[in-house]
Amino acid sequence: MDYKDIISKIKSVRNYKEDVVSPEILQELKAYYEKGKRLIGEIQLEAILKSKDEVYENLRNMAGYNDMMIEAPHYLLFLSEDKEHYIENTGYAVQDVMLKAFGLGVGSCWITIHDGEAIKERLGIGSDKKLSALIALGYDDNKNKVLYENVSEYNPSHAEVEIVEDNVSERMRVRDLVYLNKWGEDADPEELARVGLLDAFFYARLAPSTKNRQPWRFVYDNGMVVLALRKDENINEYEQKVDTGIAMLYFKLIVDSTLFNLEWKFGKPDKNYAVPSDYEIVAHCIS
Image (cartoon, rainbow, N blue to C red; front, side, top):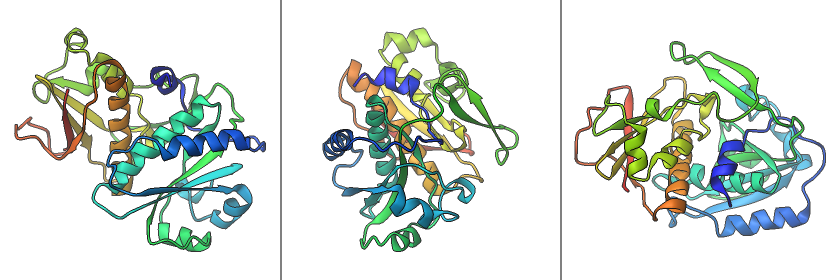
């Protein structure tokens, strides 16, 4: 896949055509998922494909942002072992499938889940695994538009939804997201280009996030890349961890395609980077 092209164009699709996706494409997606990317390979993650008839009416007023269920011809449900960092692993693996689907001309969207056990019961899913993600899948019925949810820095609980033409123009700049050596020291894009990481940071900033709040910040320090996430009272732990996994995926996809294979590690490195109290270091890697 041309990850740079797909990442720059992918959007969350809220409105779907009634047309079902062909069995051939669904099979290709299934095959891709089975060999797909994982943040933690030891965690078992299972995908179940269901139709609109099986899901939509059953989950109305039970799933979705403000319990507004998205209507789509297909749904993917992901069931995970309940192990440490299973939510970040879900975000990482599921977003990779969504990138693949977009490359095949199929739109998708994360659907908010509040009570995974209740959803499993409602859909007749007998599994000891956690319902870790619910995804709508189908053909976009609102071409060339991106639904962008703009959250005020001063009032995070307030979000304004607007339609924009692309997935790039409303994003923060690399200069706003990356610090050099320690927190607060703006990184020079020329320096990031010199060490081969400018593209990775550029595309990582396009990672989707809950309410599009773009909560990630990076510190680059002589080969060390530190990922910090803003702590928001109006975003729950599940959403923050999914956002973390997706940001880790986007950064790694670009680095792997241009330089080498890096591995993220959860937690803080030994060095103190003076990260403010409203942010938390969640992972780091050596580039």
